[in-house]
Length: 526
Image (cartoon, rainbow, N blue to C red; front, side, top):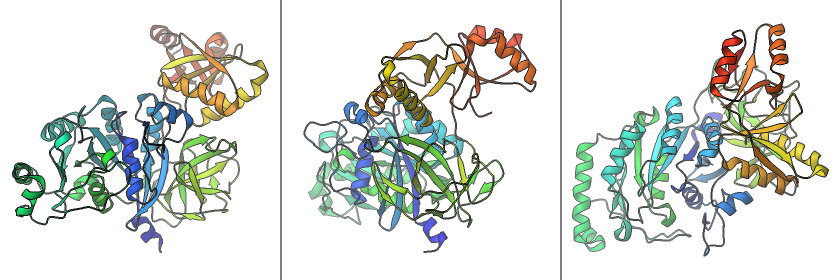
């Protein structure tokens, strides 16, 4: 196949939502329909012995939440789908924001009982910044939820985007009968099955068919005809271009846990979702069909396989063809890198591949050369822009509980920080180590992983810190003077950049006033 054909075949998207809306369950069902797995697992369940494919870290299985973005690829109807399941929990939002830089579109899951929740609004703002196309999936219709019309209004109002339903539910909760596909004018009735696919489908080309009344009852049939007339009357016809520009969100209804409505969404998704798009660098815009390879690292994960202490860098391919064993220019590094071990993922199951194309996400085994935001190219010195690293909100001092394991602790902290799990600051005075995170839960994850993966035991002691500010100054002498006078509050981050650790807002303001020539930055990309 030519490069253009390969690009046309690919769809790369992330699933985003507030915690517990059913993101990971929907991921499972998409894999089930894609034939990538035979039996879907449960996020938390006593009866089902298979855990979900995308929550594979030990802590995720125990807590029933997603902690890290997982990447899965599968084929569906001759389309190559790259799917990223993101953590919904706000403590891991930074991982999700970075992941959104690596996809071309998004499926947003909304719980029909709770409606639009706060984390969904925050994630939607990130999609808005890039005009990422969004498809909305309203989930959990097997429960008594809110009225579908109210939900549509709430999505428009809170997420500030126009909507257009492309499927419509028949009943809800105990009386839930199925979903009518407005896009293809077909009615699919499913029998609830939580684990395997059922092929039992009724197809209606015409809603006036008397057999419809026999199947779902005269009341439901009359209601459905009325709803469909109303929707077709109120909403304009669905315009694919408006969706691709991020102006309108198609809405699907279903129940992921029962396989209801997922198939309709997937079938429509592969028809309308965008193929890989152009990306901005600090030099120019890079188009996917360019012959030369380029891509960027948006995530790093250590110890995906506990038996081999490995690090995998997740690379999004932006243009050209990526080939195994070929040397590529590492824009930030001193020398070109070649990768003999290149994988594509099915959560933690991996297969070695020889080539990959724009839109694909590949895993590169790395010994510590790569970090988040790095660009690889076939020669050009350009850097892909827009991968954030924020100033943390909560600070804790790392206290080593076992002096014999100091080496393991150093290594563990270094690798976890390179993954972007949190940020590490080492004070110049006394070498105290402080970890800064966006949320409380990250400390538990770090503590758990240090113990399980590196055999290092730590405690985290609270610290009275307000902000970590990266500092710079055009005059080196003045910078040295500032560092000397404020030595107690100066630390270095993992890249050895100078950081000023401010104890309170008012004090930071005072220091800024007293040292006008020093610049204080709240993100590390200046």
